[in-house]
Length: 474
Image (cartoon, rainbow, N blue to C red; front, side, top):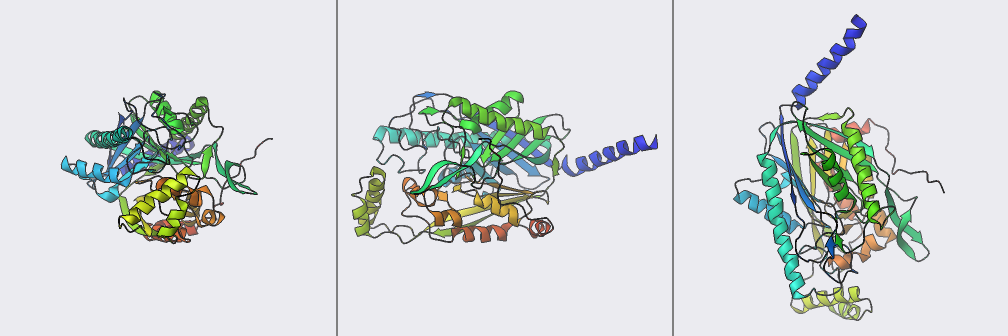
């Protein structure tokens, strides 16, 4: 009898300890709002589109999760179905929340873009995407949607704050396998194509938020390092991230699912280009989330400490006026447009920037979880590096966070060249590519924000692999 009772008593004791540590000290609330436009607007992501969207194939959402540890200030996680929400919109959201009496500290607010390529263009993101100025009426509708999205994000955050209740947080990490490296080396350079041997990060970290008694699921939050480029039509759709959100909320009515993107700038979903594939990939994400949240997870305790730090990422030597004039005659309309725009700035006496302001954000939930939020289209090398340098069992890295100013190549990608290293800067309207060494600037800054606890614990663990490989039957 003693042998039977002892494991039961130990389980009850462990449960009580976890409940005391995790249950009543957290408060949480979640909300989502529909952000689908009901009027024509240009979609972002692909520069070959020439008209406003044709139809709505799936509704878009902004989702918000409010978290508070004991009497600390609240922290907010927002995910938005869009190719890239700029820092200007984020700043305006914080300003309007403060005006409503709901002030959120800058470092305690993180906004993740799902990077779907089938959502409306926003003012200030990929401004040179189409290689020409938009017609005035189309530009007006882009600006209208940008304003409406700002209002809707404020609404989602305010609602999440208003729904806060005692809660418990847990997390775990699984794997999903549809992401593959998309930088394939050829005799003429790097092609955007499936690279079976390229580095990947197929981890799916998941945060589960439940009521304090564990009976109600309030929210799930997950992140996957892969582009949302399954679809390439001219229709409104959330791609695989939107389908994962939709599937989770069908399975768990009343709970909110927040999907973010990891360091997936050089990762694509495969197979692609069929609407059924977006569902296939999204459902695979949802199934893994469901599997994880139905297994024992790691309790997450506080306090939730948040920090931001801005650094400057230098560009290579910016072209002079005569160089811009030569580039303006290029037969490639995007290169020519890019050059004409910068030449016009010089002619007006505007000094072109020599560096990009870049704000790095690090959150750590007590000793249980470290999250690193990086702006821009960040390549996979960054998440793999930070998991090596810190404790891989407790480290979660997001890209597309708080701003999407351009691609952020690693040193390896910068040296290899190609789209992610240089060419994409044209569409983002940057004067030239970055100078060598930005990975070092970012990594050293992250290290100053990460508590020693995560560094020292990492030193006790065996080295994590650089990337994963998947055996493919041919």
